[in-house]
Image: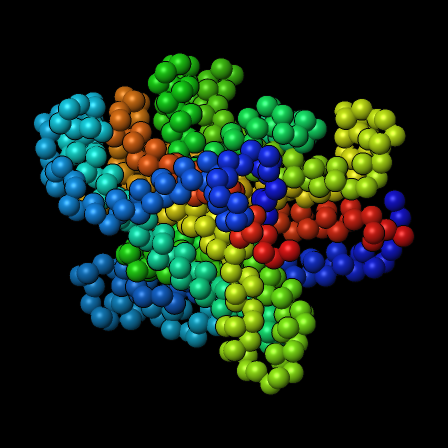
Length: 286
Length: 319
């Protein structure tokens, strides 16, 4: 939906196989990997326990012992941001994996089988696209109560229809190709067609779509936490950290600025990475 | 512009789909809130309630009837404007929403009036001088705004205008709108935030729509016969891009729905979204359902409008 925004002339590719990344893409990838590593090793590198009140002052400034200042209770923000990465990255990753694997499998099945199955499934899932995502989250969490499994499933449910639509559109194109017709004439089953004929041919664009959807999920999760119905205290993801410390905003406290920077660095770098994916991966569909 | 009956058939088809979608959406909203765990009667009466009292209240509220019939009567109530009563303070939900709706609509209206001319100018300019410094700058700015959560745009706006420049109050919505300056101050921050969020989407889509048209052979022809780039875009491309642009405008405005939920909460603005977020905190289900439907209906109308405009403006469907 948002391709072709970058000029192709400013590519700094070094190796010429068409799979190399340009500068912006590499910076994006580095930041993504950085946060992924942090999410894994956070418990071992945090300077203070995230729940411990370490400073008598609240909304403390940046200092040598508290690199990102302290929060509204005097807890160390650096430790809380590092631990927050686990929630933000972990929940979003689980959500996007569920949403996209479900969407892609259903999309390919619908494209291969066609007929009534396709029509009804498409209509139904399109209808769910008619609910604004943040609102969907609000309603479900209001009813069920907030917990991490509920958040993951809700986020997956919100973005499954979009992923289905995208994968189905790609699969329908591949489905009309000769090699699929040949395979069908050979008498192959639906499962084989999906696995061997369709899936490898839509993989590139589908992965790019997965990245974009990851950004949307991070944004909605942060939004839900910001509204107070995401990850529940005493734990906090990055959106929750902003909510906790929003009072410090009028003081210009670092406690509210750093979680914001963390979210932005992750989402912007994923977008940068996707926008600068090698043409070969992105345009497989054409 | 004379249109064939085929076009109107397509539009009618699209409206029909919107109606079916609306029914499925209301079904989803109703069952998400009604059928999931947490018995309403028990919540209302609290922990000290006797089983008899709970059973009595369930009976009185009609909770023992089959879910489907409750859904139908709820839907019927919605259609006739009877949205039930709030669990928390027993005020009619229609009254509660009615008071807040005008506030939200005013906010959305002001944002739209500012946003549309601004975004169209930026989008068309960026497309006209594609790959120029201006275009790069606009692209970077819009993708940054799209990549970050709405509450962060709000946070940045507060930091810039309230903390550093000290022009506007930070997070409070002053109830006194005694004079024009106070009114302006109260509205400024929510409007600035929402305008940023919605314009970013609108600029990107407008730019894409114009560039799509510039790529067509007849616009290339105009360039080849010697028209300036400016003339090529404004006289040849733009009239043909009007449909896609109108489509982009309606689609971007649907981002208001998500944005308004965050912005009203951040700035304590007394609109429907704030009402709904507060209702979530108190688990006031009738209020949540009705607010959700207000948002779904506005969202669906904008999306449908965008599709209808796209259909009507497609010259291939004109006879």
